[in-house]
Image (cartoon, rainbow, N blue to C red; front, side, top):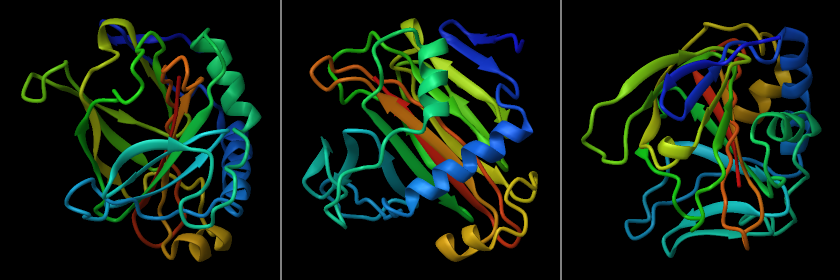
Length: 241
């Protein structure tokens, strides 16, 4: 049984919570679901600037961002189709460690080359009683987390394939982000033509975030990272609520 490591008050880390065979099974499931909910580039509210990461969602609701603002909606903003269901392995993890209502949204982010996720808070839900859970698949990512102020002290930790991070309670509104991906650090996606075709590159990291019901306004997140063989990419999936 994998034991949790306390990084900060309210922040827990499980090293290789998913062993290699389960990582591969989860990655295959995520990629299959992305066939019907293709990755796209959201835009920043106001400035309309594209994110450096690409995103998609699983579950009844999906988190989206465009010039008009952030919101949850039941359909893919490009295809107009409903989001695929959250993968059973991710929902099972959510039920095991989050111990709260089922998530309704699983956000997936893809990082290519120099893509990153700046420090931010997950605070669009209104009720912060549920934690954020992050699962990593593939190349290592440098994850940074601090307190409730952007300029406060932060702590960085390398997340490897199969690692799981959860933050809630006193850390629920902690600023956090992904500073960079260590290209070639994992061979989980090596020689994967499907990945190369889908993303146009070879190294990838995946992360996921879950969110229970919008009415409850809670958030949980799952993040994952994965790799192919040519360039540097990263997928981030997060589950909230």
